[in-house]
Image (cartoon, rainbow, N blue to C red; front, side):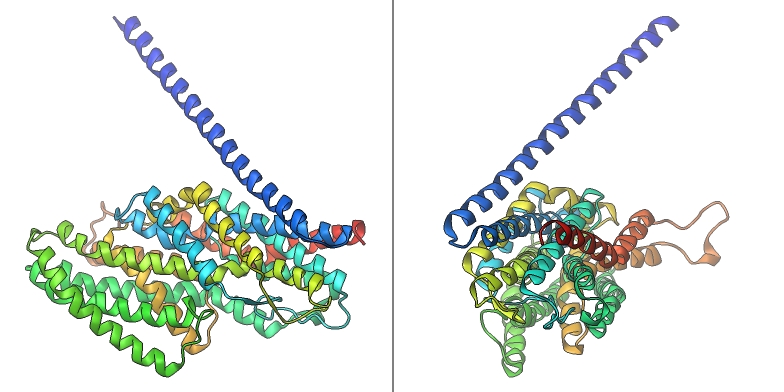
Length: 482
């Protein structure tokens, strides 16, 4: 009898090992297919650019190489950066990963094409000041090196499930290549110091704002006896707050390339949209509450629709703003080939360049985005609809505060900081005070510390790692190309 049980046990283990190996094989095949689709996209970019440009052979080579690397960068932005907006909604079980990817792909590409702007800074927020000592040829390879280094770093971060700032990656790339070209004198160290300060400012602001919002929801709605009456009063107010925040956010960030809103217009439209949202949402919320029970899980459903609107607008604004990280250096190279051959501080972005960025971001999201969306939404701390709502609203409010104060912030750092802020607030609220903790019972950890430390480490090394890569790539270009 014992012998038969041992045989059955070995048989079950063999089946498990076989199933595990088969699963790994399927994952590898799927990954190779996704890589193949990405490669086809980059080949199409190269072929189309080569077919439609009329330049000398060397200039055509540089432009085609820049277009391929720009497409590669866009793929990586879609795979990494977009997860910060959609991850909380997935983690809160408001939408599935597939739905999140489709919504984000549409909104990101729409934002890039409709509101991506026609002008971009060639030196990424003024991090370097190329003067007469930098030749046009050196400037082209500087931008090429920065773009490739940033794309490689984001690719590596995505592989290790670390959400990093694409803006900081390209800033680091331009910094490193610039230092290699012309030394310390080319760098605007004041701008660099402000960007370094944002490593702390962004996540701390995001975490504090998200925690405060969640605390209000907990005290006023979720922890009261009559949750339905409380929700009837407070959820329309919260929706109104979100409408006002996103009105100002879209005016100052999402739509700024289409139309420059004056301060007076922002002050007029923001309260107008707040009032409109309040009076429209109140009867809608009251009608929904009648169908719900007086339970937290039912109250969560009231946050689903406003959360979806919020993350969709965040994705639109992200596509409008961050497409420049993918195609800004490419546009700078194009300007040196067509616009008199000089180095300009700001250049126009041709439609075909913007299209490469928009399609690349959407395709990268569709192919590789689900992995990091799951990480952001589920592996840092446990989320639900109200918590995810607080992350989305915190992102908009934090950007508005920082913009008003003139502080540089990263949308990636804000969103991740907001998730950590919510997790640490949960630990504080759900654990008893130290005096009441028995010796046999320790405090529950509701935030995964390994993700906290790994993500923080990735943020700290992003600029120096990207800079080192860019400097090395430029050096290789310098000894082989010119």
